Length: 102
Image: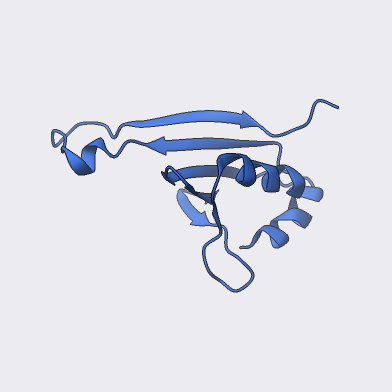
């Protein structure tokens, strides 16, 4: 699904669970949660939609009509250092309100 396809759905009252994932200090990807699966938002050409800043990603989601999103930042610690087999992944999650106050 692309952002342009999501916008009319939002206008009709559909408010999906959306996550903005910080993949790198300057790469942000947007996912829609469909059931238990996360599906990336795509560009019109079918490539994954990428943003260079959190504010750019949230601005476009706000303009599309989304009211809230979950910001997710996973630590690279597990990849670089490793963790115990049963340890929980380290990530920061924050619910973001996208509605304007005006």
